[in-house]
Image 1: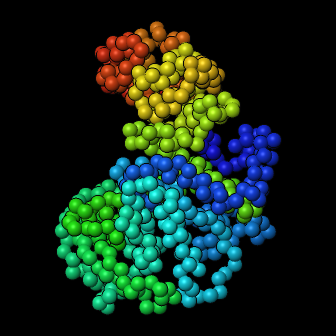
Image 2 (image 1 turned 90 degrees about the vertical axis):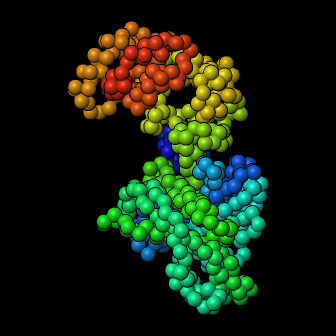
Image 3 (image 1 turned 60 degrees about the vertical axis):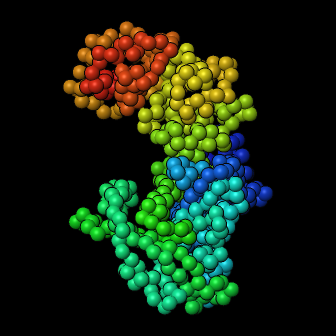
Length: 529
């Protein structure tokens, strides 16, 4: 799923009927349960969490599968009853210091079966759908037992008194955005009491884009905080809960939002000790990391696997497919983080699922991690990640050797190449050479920029080594139709001597090349026809 970002069985099997049938039988096998699939989410996460402060981000998303009145697929209603599908509650672990994804932790996947007839307020917490927030956090205690500290972070739906009353421990904390203006032990309302807290600090905070709701912008936020004592709800059926719990409220307000935008206003409840503004801002920063799970949902549903496009016929199989897709989306998120911030985490976290060494049975399995980033058909769609299709085999082998021996430093590639033998280097480089050559962009491009690029090629004699068609030769790489951003980045690194080749020729060639020429060269070479 990571290599071919899809949940389509035919695509995953590359059209081979035997594999499509095999996948189908796997999903239909009664011994393959959704509970066991979910347990498998945390195999690598538990190890990666050891000794860290872990943020355990949990959230629920609706997976809306296409149905018709004659084809319900066994799916219950979701949302406000206008769609049918499954509900996925997932928890993802992050390193609290770096924000790096350590993997999925626990969760629940289900489809609704009819309407619950007992009124919500007349049910105990354990008999409500909302109990998933407590159940998943309890499971996290076991999965993340080796962590130094765990902080469960969630949005407003997780503001449940039973959660505050039962989950916290000395190294197990909660941060949740307030949903209710709760009653305090003195009878006052939470929000009214907060009005008496003094604003103590202000800071500019970068807000990420929210699909269809908010553009990315910089907001000036002010902060206030104070201790509060929540009273047990008067109408709760959980009479065994304590009469009150002590928490800290951290309130963040955008007092002067830009015209036409909704002001930021977060009321964050936490079990962490907050003694000053620095500690309060830390709570805010940890809460902001919750947005990572929004990226996870996009990879699962929209930009990556497109889970909602699955055509599986039954709810049982769709739920199992969802459980499998969660793991794949988490690996994809780790790959993206490793690419964009290669020093944040060892790439081994992302590749733990792949048999990229001698444990894999086929070459196809072993090369899967490479294609996940560099493109299944040899043409990369990932920013600053090179296309490998049609690359010269001797050049590819030299680069893999340099990565293996750490003569070329890039952590994600150093980790991938580390277990490769000399024979592996030859096998992988031969496969890379056989991948389809990357194609130029469909548009003809800006004629003036292309002309300047051609002039720069002639001035610096790029075609002497790389061939007139820029296909490369032997240990000289193919640069025709390479990604423009990767070309520009690489040329700039050669010029600044930040990238070291196996000889000094490229640094010498790039010394007189101007930044403007680098941009024109990258633009032209990416569009060579």
